[in-house]
Image (cartoon, rainbow, N blue to C red; front, top):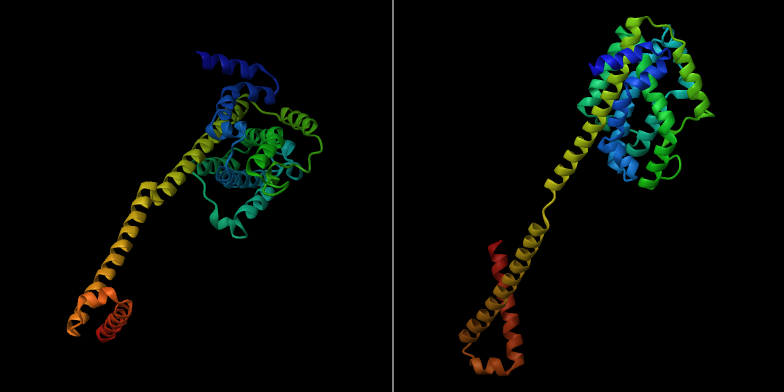
Length: 306
């Protein structure tokens, strides 16, 4: 009953941008409360989180911008087609190259949710280009609205210099974000849609938010799994201490064994030479002489063994 009431409200409002705000209100709140976005709000985003996010954003924007480019003359896409002002793909490529190097394409890793998002964008690009309006509005205006703030948080949290891996948040083609958003909404509201297509665009706007939430959640799971794998590969403190202790004990045992063998060698040589033990104990010279003899015998046995 509540759902029917929402649909009734959304279809009587005239502006498409306002209708999208109404139907995506709950999803918007949920997206802001994902673990990844909460980390941003707290200002404790990690480098690994950011790099994984950039990888997913690259795949998403590549699919979105390819679909927009191929449908740029479509009656629903043309009014909101602003590649010079909004395109993100080139900026993302530069950011990824900054962090991963020239072979960054080989290092991109994305979760299953990102792949589903990409598949959906390519699908509607072929079958329902009018639905691209919902995705373009959700992504571009969302990034334009929060880009400056998120860029500052990222730079501060990660200790990055200005421009280093932060180009995604910069819109050099937009001099005034607020004015541009007004222009974008007015263009979007001018799009002519019949009742069925309008409802389809609104449903797609909800889907766009849901897909983004799934991506955020999957990225966090991926990060947790990576941390778990790293921890499992590292020996625990107790294991390291135990290993160190064993090595120390082994060294001590070898030292004592060697000392014992040398003492025994001295006694055997003294016996064979018929030297009194008391003379050995009282004379440092005899002890040194016997030590040299033992060493020579040991080396000789080692060479013979080879």
